[in-house]
Length: 315
Length: 76
Image (cartoon, rainbow over all chains, first blue to last red):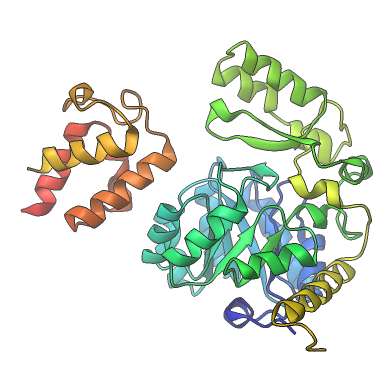
């Protein structure tokens, strides 16, 4: 059994977070992950507070295990959602796409565990100072909003820079990925793309099929110029983005093209002109499983590898 | 003294010429810092000048002059 500081901190059985994926990670998926012993995470994305509230109530009906809510700091509703999470006293808040500094105090005062996603060492140190309970360092292998540094490089640097436990994210899709993350000093992992293929995940079947069909070179990062680059599976929308970039289109034009496209793919199933966000690890993934099967399989594999690393013949 | 230190950090962090930095230079628009760079800057300044820059004040630090004034005030 792999039991780490992250398990202790959050009172979970397996040190694995399900990535908060906008339009994808709802209460049902998060509840299934939490029930299986990981940390399920509801993505609040750009959702209005009423919707986030109903998802929180739903997950509380489905499980009594700890769960998290991901706050997307670029959301137009970020103020109200931050307040709502205090009122609802959610167990864990994960933050992404920005600086949660101004909300940190009210969340900590409410007794909520706060775990920001960071793209660099400077952010990690800063959030530790502000009272973060742990840090998720996310490499550019991840899907959706990404930074520049790889998981292999950012993880050990963040681990060395902070005293709080570090969760590695980006590029982790099986037990080998988990073992590698632990080798780099992480105390837990966050996995997004593999949970897209979870049976409990409500994303459109076309989206799942596209992830299953993806190979190692299937993703591309678009919109670097906007300051919020996004990793997606290549399709005609990605081509349109690349065309705009080639023609030096304005940030406004690019943001206009992106509007509503994740919904179009994840909910409506348009994987040709919709935005199919996915990590690079999609190429490794080929089957749909329940959350429980995913977690158990990943950790059994990781454990086996780590035993052998420790000198072999330990079985 | 503070200005020199700030200039030194800006030159190193943003790869700009020292001559191109004036008190009116906007850190983002003129010196080309993105949000990650800004963070590196702030954490280096905090470490090297032994100050804490409050989150709520980040928005006020648009130009090099704003930053220098802010740090001078803090150092009083």
